[in-house]
Length: 380
Image (cartoon, helix red, strand yellow):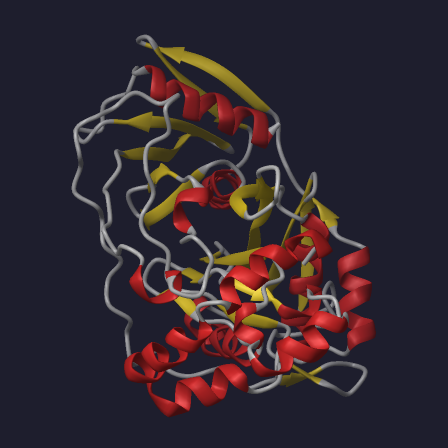
């Protein structure tokens, strides 16, 4: 945290004599001891954020029923047995002539995803879940049916400077000392036509910025996604799946190019996109594009070719950081309008993408067309 934030820290510490008693009463000795312990991981999980609000630039719409993710299946069949590579290490993928490590990386612009050969999503899921929890994250979404796994907002404790303030006060009350940054990661897992698995990671970030003349107040601002960090996470996942650090870096540094031409079409007053690629590849790329806009995928139905999305305001997801804010902030959740993004085959090796209403008809509203425009910009 910047040195100018010391006034904020002083304000926080002024309530600690009252706060410690409240903390013990609310959370118990084990939680208190855990918070006072030294950092064990780089990321420290943050509290669950409330749902998101429709921003001012989108029109107010009737509240729609949210599509809740199905419950987690307890019988996934377990992780597949690992297979030896030509170099002798064991990998989760199935090595072949084209992929001696049993996996490879593909890219479209600055977007990258991992292809695990010969494995289905449910065979990959257990180790993917272990990866996130072993690295100190709390899973906010864990839905193998939809192929969506996302972490809660987390604080990267490695970003906190090791200055005199943290070395003194921070040793006693480290939870009152914040790095002022939050990160969240979303993983989507898809089955390919040849029985392999596509896996991608999307990063979201927020930063607390000090405001006011005396810098005693603050607000959260969105930071750009970090494609370099996404690529680094993919490398770590590859190592979890059995590759060495050198092998993972080799694949990450040499991705196979993917992507196709995107054409805008007009359909009864509604714009649609034509992608010159088959459904499987278009489905993956549209999911990636949605994750990299301000829309969050609530649910998805691959058989129907539907992504259920709502507008995402990351700032609204974060509670006001502060000592009592962790316990006494409001948990009120507000629903927002949900949009249906339809991905469907149009012809041989051509896929159509558009926004439809609940009856499956093209949605010609200005908000729906804004989504199509954002998708076009991302897919191009």
